Image (cartoon, rainbow, N blue to C red; front, side, top):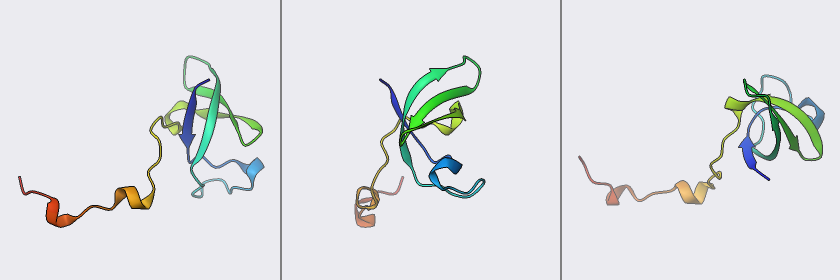
Length: 74
């Protein structure tokens, strides 16, 4: 099984179209070879464009924090 992450809105999950949606883990079911992927997310099956799928694990805010004193000027 291959899993991805997406912030694509799903009306079936209460999201509003064209509005920011929470980042969700999805399971890839099928890819049509062009641009559409069939995914399972929180018990529903939906079609999304492949460029809405991200393979990197999302970072928490704590993981993004850095000490600016440690940064070096190039």
